[in-house]
Amino acid sequence: MTIKEAQEAVDHWIKQYGVRYFSELTNMACLTEEVGELARVIARTYGEQSFKAGEKPNLGEEMADVLWVLICLANQTGIDLTEELQKSFDKKTGRDKERHKNNPKLS
Ligand SMILES: [Mg+2]
Image 1 (cartoon, protein in one colour):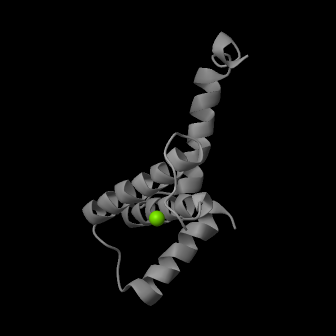
Image 2 (cartoon, protein in one colour):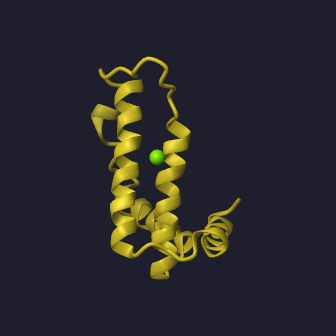
């Protein structure tokens, strides 16, 4: 699935099952909530926190939840994520192409 197809699929799902998009403010709160859920899994998988008995790591699921809400926000604000991600690559390549190679902490 391309990013464009993902944006279209989320839009189709929202129209078919979601009635309409939550407001941008509600979705921003939902995005923050999902990032928190992702942070919780990471803290328990890679950090010093522990899962409760019977809890299973669901890293991929939480990443997908974050992506879903981000796509909703992009769709309802008219953002083409393919175009924006390409711009981000261009910006990072122009600005940072030597920066990380010259960072002794990364070698
Ligand atoms: Mg979640």
